[in-house]
Each structure stands twice: as structure tokens, then as C-alpha cells.
Length: 205
Image (cartoon, rainbow, N blue to C red):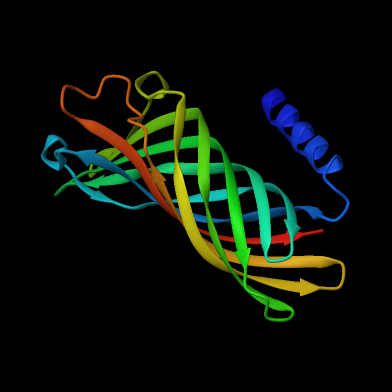
């Protein structure tokens, strides 16, 4: 929580010293993540990999000039995957604080503006859990020591902005492409990386 508050304060200070001809704002956004782990080579994992649904939410800070806008966010994001076998399901549930830095290109079109989003992100792992579901019951284990604390990657997406008096409503879809091998000891020649699709709605002031 202390790191989260420090990051929020730093972002507010950046907005405070922006040039006066830039429009700036703060807001909240939330939504759903469909995530999975990409394991290479795939045959090193004995389960069929499926998407894991999870929540995403947090705050964003933005500054823009005409059709261009820069935005940073501080998000809680559930990542991981489901591994499906004939009579068992294994879930990896990993909770991150994710900080994306993005450039948004707005298409001028009145109060409803299409946007294209591109950028990168860094993430810090808060906790990781493995959950095994079988016909005889459910078991869980703490996997925090198995995964690296830091992850990073690039992202891209599209969305819409709705400009209303005093507020800005947003909706967007984005794809997060993890670049880091997130497991401490994944084995020789094996890599495991995060991937996710996020659908987010927000309100800015």
C-alpha cells in the first residue's frame, strides 16, 4: 500500500508541473482480464491451456495536446491461466500491480472520439496461488516463491472516448504482450510469459 500511495503522489506531481497548454486529468477505470501463460515449448506442460478470467481496476492520469495524449495508470490486475485435463483443472492466479505508460492517438470526431493506444507496462507481483480442482475436492498452494516479482511487456489497443460536460467516459480493449520469463526456475530451454486481453471502462475528470 505504501508503494501504491507513493506512485499516486508522484503522478499527481507530474500533472501539476505540466505546461498550461496541455489538458490534464485523473480518473478511474475497471474491467475484465482474459489471461493465459504462454509456455514454450508447449509440450513441457501436461495440461491444455485455457484463459483465466480476472478483475482489473485502478486509477489513471492523463495529459493531452490536440489529438495526442499520454496516460499512465496504476492497476490491480489478475493474471494467470487455467490448465485443463480429463478429470482435473489447475489454475494459476497471480495478482499484480501493473503500471502501463501509453500514447493515445485521438481521431477528432466531435463528442465521440475513436482512439488508438500503444505503449508498455511494468508489473509487480503481489501474490501467486495454485488451485487444483478434482472430483474429490479443491486444493490450493502459495506459489509466490516460484515466480519473479517483476514483469514487463508492451501493449496495444483501440477504444472510444465520450466527452461530456465535466467528465470523460472511456471504453477500450487492449492486448498485453509479456516479454519477461516470469518463473524463477522454468528449466533449460523453457520460458513462461504473460499474455492477456483486457476490456476496460473508465471515467475521467
